[in-house]
Image 1 (tube, rainbow, N blue to C red):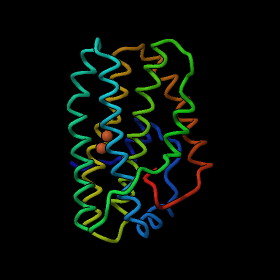
Image 2: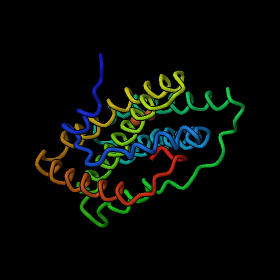
Image 3: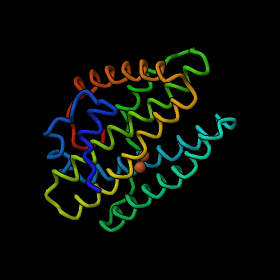
Image 4: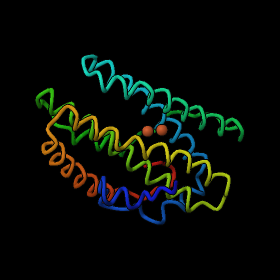
Length: 204
Ligand SMILES: [Fe+2]
Ligand SMILES: [Fe+2]
């Protein structure tokens, strides 16, 4: 099935700002850096899901849905790792994740447990959505056909994840509240993307 992610992100998740078209060209030059950054993104996705499970043992649906995501994200990490190995590249150290740190700064401090949970779900949805959009860019914009296919697999997989976090939020919290907060997150992310430096050594 052909996935039209642009339409998805516009209509369903509504990312407000598409990635700067220059980014994919910069990323192509620094593909080694992108691989290292990507490896850590996948690792963090897996560990965040584990931590969400640990913090919400009473939420049955969340446990059920996130447990396989942990395996999937860890599988993604291993896929990137083997790509690095193929190129005789070390994993390298984790880089400062400016994008995620700025998102974390927008989370409600000292809110109710429900508000904190909602922000945790929405921040994950946003990271998945933006990652998905970035993988789409790579899968369409890179010259290297092999790498295009490589990123396409990630794009398809992350497309399923972003909707899952919204669905989970709506399962536990009133839909209207979820939508309202989601639109605030989208607005914030737009500003963030707008003011961020376009650099080719990071996924976000
Ligand atoms: Fe992933
Ligand atoms: Fe994911």
